[in-house]
Structure formats: structure tokens, C-alpha cells
Length: 559
Image 1 (cartoon, rainbow, N blue to C red):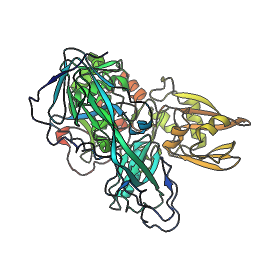
Image 2: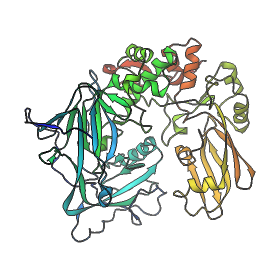
Image 3: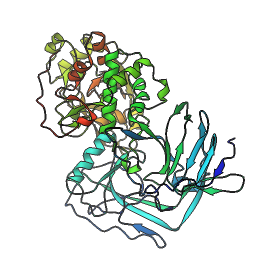
Image 4: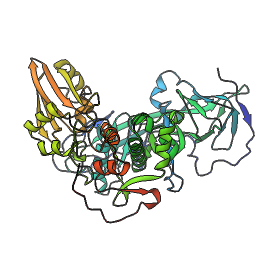
């Protein structure tokens, strides 16, 4: 049990400019739609648009409720833009704490904050301070005087942030202030009056909120409400999950009316918690340095990823896995220090620094992994010596793909355990995976590749059932059929309701192959050569050097 906190008099001014007006209602949205726009009380998949595009007024709210027409979500201030001279990221160690959906259920468990050494200092927006080594933040349900109703047109769910961002950009090109959210899956929300992008059919989401959970402390002399946001300082570190984090920290609302525990992490310390978990601390120095550059670049390029929730990045696989920075050994720290504040840029901007475990011997172009235009520095190529490249000209046709999967052992990174793989798919597995995507599919009868990209990866996979058919595209293939490590595969029937999938690689295949980088580093390649191999035409620059400039020429690739 946590010791009773010691309440201190307000010895510092309130956190001015950070406070959100007290306990305003949850999820905000309007509602705008196409003529036949269906109403949905949960996330729903985007479907092709049909018929003329028009905006129609949303239905009025039920009696006693208030419709929010001017906002899309709970009002959360955006996180500050990182300063290139001293960049810091707001990273969510825990998200969706005390969700409002639990109103009818049990009280959410208290949030326990424990110091690793010494004490914690908690300060709320009113300037009230609490000090203790072990603090419990309790939750109290606060009903609203009137239930709130929010309606908004939404696209999604999407298999990835990258695909959601492409859809959001289509809306933004029409002048619509679209936002990307992650209530469970990636979605794109727009104001009520927004006309849908061509070829996309949003659904009208409706949310109702009778109240929300609010934080409070419960010392011996009575409950003490806490005004948001709440700042936590931990000079000796905060114990969280199985690690210790340096902070400082924030407890603040998100776009859904629940709460997030954030760490305000200096960028270089953040990398100490990322690099060893992404590539492995025992990797060669050049591979570690490349991973440090890419993790730094990726973080800055994606700092808007959770802007709707008031922070920059998460700590799980939706971002980069971030764990206890103390676990970084000497080699990882050296890799980070040797590349301090350096990022990979193209045309003066941080690149899409995507990376993955192994590409199976052939790299994917950006457009083979996500919907969107090709990127000049993310191209498909055979990832191996000149002789292998000459034997496998791109685009890979069926014979070339079969040859790669059989004889690709000369490729860089071929020693990775998932460089080659086999999986069995059954009708029962496919039915279960597609239950929410194609509810009328029936019993799967056929699995067929409709389209491949230049690297041979599957871009469109058709599944025909006894009642209907569906086509999975791009990142939705692995998102739906989660047993498949990549989309670089061949599929063949082996019996009624059974298919064998033979493939290579683990991950989307675009950008740096971590297995390939490790192999190349062991062959004597340096940092810059590895980065140019996987991201041709980019420049390694300091953060302060990011500026607009003419796009560099894309060089020819040499092994």
C-alpha cells in the first residue's frame, strides 16, 4: 500500500498556459456526411464512394443532450515542437488510463507512482504540491450536468498510421482540417461540414458522454481533487513497469476523455531506451550508429503522430519500442553519442526513416507497404552483391520471385532466422481473421494474389468465400493475416480449405534491413555507406541544418 502523501502549501505559481478548463466534456465532434452516409457507433472500414458527393445535416441530439458541432474531440493542447538545440519528446508510458467507457463498470484501479530513489514531487495546474516516495492517484466519476453527443465523419480503421496519414492528406488537400486518431485502430476524423475525398466513403460516428473520471489524492484528511495537467518530478527516477525513467512526467487528458502518463524525455536519452530494443545491443558499431540515426530521424519525422492526444509518441510497436534507458550498454551509448543530433534528410526535411528486421533479400519501395506516392529514397532493389542483382532483375516476375525464395542465400542479412519462412493457412483461420472485415464471406474457397509490386511483394490478395469475396491490400494484408511475417510470399492450395505460404523477410521491407545492416557492418561497411545503400540520395545533417533545399539527385545503386 502506498504511504499517505504529504500535502504542501502552494509554494510556486500555477502552471499557467497548461491548464485545460476544468472538467469539460469528453470526445468532441461534429457530423458531416455523404447523402447515404451510414451512422456507426464504432470504428468502421473505409469503402469506395458511390454517387454524388454532398454534405447533409446531422440528426439533432436526443432531448437533454448537447451536440458538439465545433470540435472533433476532447480539447487537448498540442505538445510543444522540439527545439533543435535541445530536443525533447513527450512520450506516453501509459495511455487510455481511466477510460470513460468504464462509467458503468468498476472504478478504474489507482495509478501508482513510485520513486526509484528519494521522493516524488507532484504539482497540479492550481499549484498544489504533494511530496512522497509512493503516491496513489485515485479516480472519481464526475457526471456532466447534461450528456454530450459528438458526431463526426470518420475514415478507417487503417492498418497503420502511414495509411491513415495518406487519407488525411487527401482531406487536407480539399481544405479540410482532418486529424488522425488512434482510439483502438487508426482513424481520420473531419469536421461536420467536410466533403469526403474522392473515392473514400466516411462513416458518421456518434459518441455519447455522460461524464468522465477525474484524478484525486486521498490523504488522511480527505480527498484532494487534482487540476489538469499534473506534473511529476522524480529526481531519483520513477519506477514504471519493469524500468526506471528519468522524467519529468505529466498526467493529462487525451482526445477520448481518458488520461495519459507522459515522460518529457530528452531526445538522446529517449534513444537509449529505443536503440537496444530495436536492433540488439550486440550489433556491430556501424549498425548501431545507423539505428541511432534512423531512430532519431523517425522520432522527429513522426512527432505529430499522437498530436491529437497532446503528446508526440507512444512507447510500443505503434511507434518505436521505448523501454528503460538504463539498459543501454556502452556500445549503444557510444553509437548515440557519436551521431548526436544527426538525422537523415531529403530536401531539407527528416526522411520517412522506416526500417524493419529483414527484407528477405529484396527491399520494398514505400508504395509497396503503404498507400501513397513513391519516395525517391525508398526504392525497391535486390539487397545483395552485384552477381545476385544481375540474376534477379526488377520488377520481379513470378519466376524471379520463386528463384529468390529458393536461392537467395547470397543476399545481405541471409542469416536472420526469418529470412525464409513457411506458414499454413486454413479456412478456419482466414474466416476468424476476416470476421470484422468481410462478415458475409462465408467459408473461404480461394486465396489468390492479384497484384505484386516491383520487389515481388503482394499488393492485393483476393479471398473468395462461399458467400462473398474481399481484397486485402498493402499493409492490411499482414494486419489481417497476422501469422504472415511479410508480404513477400507465394501461396498455393495444398488441400480443401488449406494453403501453404512460402515467403521471405520479416516486416514491411522498406528502408533499412536491420539484418542487412548488421551483415554489411561485419563486412566493413561504415555508417554513411550503409545509410546511402538503403536511403540513396539522402544527407546526414545536424538538427540545426534542416532547411528547405533543392532535392538531391538520386544516384545509381552500387553494391
